[in-house]
Length: 499
Image 1 (cartoon, rainbow, N blue to C red):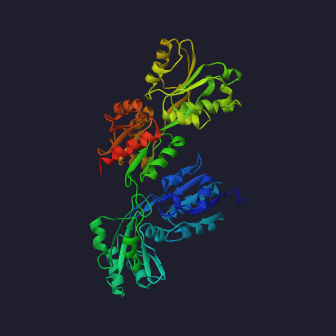
Image 2: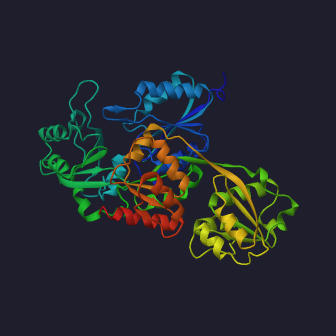
Image 3: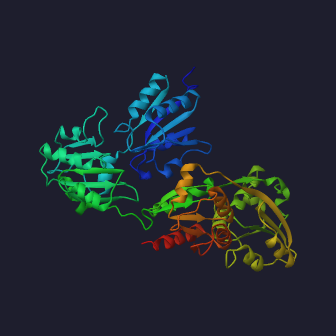
């Protein structure tokens, strides 16, 4: 079997949590992947870099909660590569810094599989930096030691490795569970009890928190603050600089888990905006969009067939222009045909294709658009819509004398949720609905399970709000208009109630 037939494996460090710290090499590997095996600490934003059709496989390992054993992960990597796949093993931090990447590389080598190691930014340095702690500093620390706080496989006690040397700064990874024993061991080996020490939880992410204490009091401070894994301990004189150098300020959605229910192809921009405000974004696409342009005219008649094309969604825009482009035409083919958009999100989708809407209603609903659209009497009007769209808008335009051609050019179908995403939805702080279909399909996907009572339900526009109320019995905040900007603003408003 040739190397190409065997596929290739990239063992890649995802960095410590902030997706902006992932390397260019890591992003290139993800973009070329057939499958990605990822850990619990891998960012959702990084997973979005994988191409459509790439299989995402969760193999996360946390203390006492393993989706797969290390042996099973190695076997799965080998199995996929032998089948010819391009496999990315995406690991939090750096794969060779307590990441067991060496074991996975050895498994590939034993199976004759080509592999590439992509280093990542380790939390040992990054978490400290985001808390304002330099791990080396002139006059304070000229050396760095990195150890694991977990009990060693050979039966050693927590802290055995740490006690064996005395660097200027000591960073302890995976050490929350045995923290008190580790700290006692260090003091027994001669570290002064008054040595500055810090604990940084969820370093580099919007959920980051930290405490600064001393070697003697750190365990108590960590317990009092309720910090837990994943966390990094920094011990040494530089830890005291956190009070002076701390710079990282999470946004207004810091620590909030926000579920985006849009189709995967549409979710990226919304997810990025929410993440920029500090949210932990969970993409739970409960629907997918399938274009059905068979009934749409796209030949040379397209420039003279209609006086108005009325778009009621960004999906309609995407499906229409995909069909037009497929026929070898673009926006120029529309000639003098005027274009209407129901609201901001739809207008933005048109602008992305070089078309500025000639008309937007005062309020972004189909009913208001049908009432306010100018020069309807005798006008030939195309409504490119979803297969689920009723004929209310078409009927209103016909009553005004319009000659309406309504064509279903896309259909929205349910998409299943895997168990991990289902659990994430049920534990969410907010769930966002950009369409009525998303609300209906999520209700069906959850079955009898109920959303947590504190979860805020946020709808983008009146039609989404109506469907959300029908599905879940309530809407906490409705966006002022059906646009991404308004939806993000509504989400911040909804979650500010918990502050």
